[in-house]
Amino acid sequence: MLLVPADVLHPRRIDEHFAAEADAARAAGHAVALVDHDALAAGEADRAVARVRGDATTAVYRGWMLTSAAYAGLAAALAPRGITLRTGAKQYRQAHELPGWYDALAAVTPATTWTAGDDEQAFHDACRRLGAGAAVIRDYTKSMKHYWHEAAFIPDLADQARAWQVARRLRELRGEDFTGGYVLRRFENFTGAEVRTWWVGGVCRLRTAHPDTPDAAPPHDADVPGLDAAVAGLALPFVTVDLSRRADGTWRVIELGDGQVSDRPATTPATTLIDALLSPAHPR
Image 1: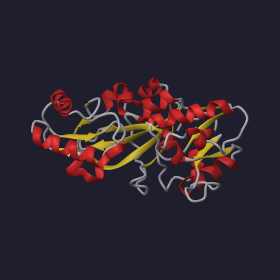
Image 2: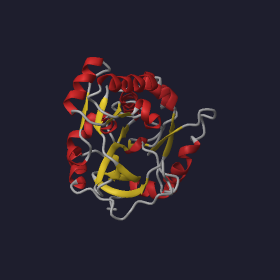
Image 3: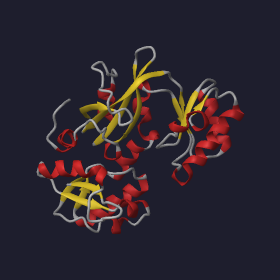
Image 4: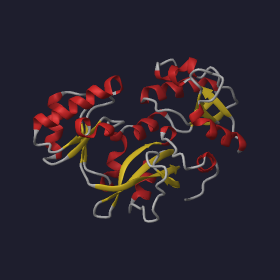
C-alpha cells in the first residue's frame, strides 16, 4: 500500500504534489490510501489515518516531511488496522536525523560533530571538537542553506562570536521545527549540481537529478567508493543519498535521508520512482 497526503482543502483528494505517484502505484496494482499530514504534525495520528482501509499489509509513505515523533505516531495508529510501515519508527529516525547515519558514512562525508539541544556552551564545545576552519551549520534534520551567510556558513569556528551569531540565527529561523541540536560539518568546496540516489533494501535502484536542479542529469562518474557497503550496512528499507563533486574531483556524500519524505525531481517520471520503490528488487 502507498500512503500519500490528502489535499488540505479537499481531504478526499490526493495532494497534487503526490498525485502522479499515487496514479502510478494504482496502475501497478498497489492500493493507495490518504493520510492527513496536518493531523499527523499535530500529534493526532488516529484522526490522520481515519480514511486508511485495507487488509493486513505493508505500507510505504510518500509525503511531506514528518518529525520522528509524528512518524512514530503514524506507525502506532496504523498497527491496529493491520498495516505495518515498511520503515519502522526507529529506522525512520535513524535515516531522518543525521546522528543516526553519520558514523556509517563518516569516511565519505565531511567531518561532523553535534550537540544535544541548543545550549551555547555545548555549541562552543562542539566547535572545539571540530577545530578551527570553515564549517556549515544545521540541525539534525535540516539546514537553512537559502540563508547561507547568516544562518548556514561559518567562515572560521575559531571566531566564537561570529560562530555563535550564525548558530543563533539558525535557531531563530528554524523556530519550533528546530530538531535535536546544532550540527557542525567541516566545509568542503563542492562544484556542480548534486545527484540524488535512491536505495531500497540497501541496493541503489535509481539515480536522478536533485530536486533543486531537476534539469541537471546525473553524470556517469557519480560514484563514491565504499558507499554501497556502507548503505547496505545500515539495513534501512528506503533511503536517499545525495552526492556532490568536490573541487578536487572526489565525489562525496552530502546527505542521507529517509526516502519516504525525499522529494522527487520534476524530470523523473513518477512511474520510474514507483517501479523502483514497489517492484521486486533490481539493481540500478
